[in-house]
Image 1: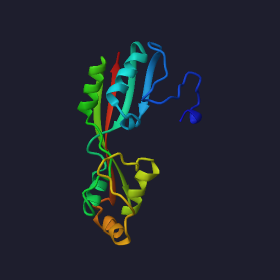
Image 2: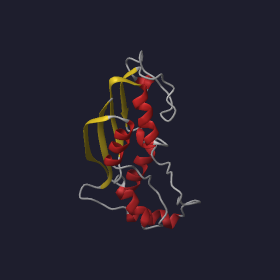
Image 3: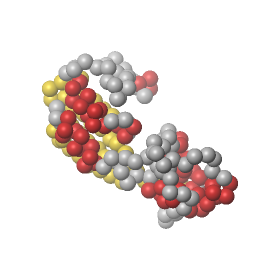
Image 4: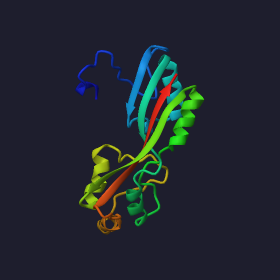
Length: 176
């Protein structure tokens, strides 16, 4: 992301779960669809609070609970293993921010839907954005057979527009 930015003079690239940044030195943190991959969002919000200057702000978007329901529904026709990641609710993210000391100046959520002309393209869309690595204890082991794969595709719910992939997205503006 930084390599494609026009101005990287004041940009920092580091592990979000181990911010290697001095305390009270950042004015603004912008995070677009990243915090849902944090191993500990509670600790991340505390770190963000620590690195921000007084009156510093965080602007973020995150995938929320309720996303990828169509994919979950299709997989449930095959087995009861976890095939999508679980995400936090907007209220949980707000709670983490408040616990860290932030003031939540704005919060909103929206349902964003991508539509594809086949279930295969819908399933591949998640892989194409790198969100197919599922972190769940009940993950299916081994390969999916040909008939199970056909059942997965035939079980994918169809909307009036095609085959949807829905994302419940949260937006937060936080102030230190």
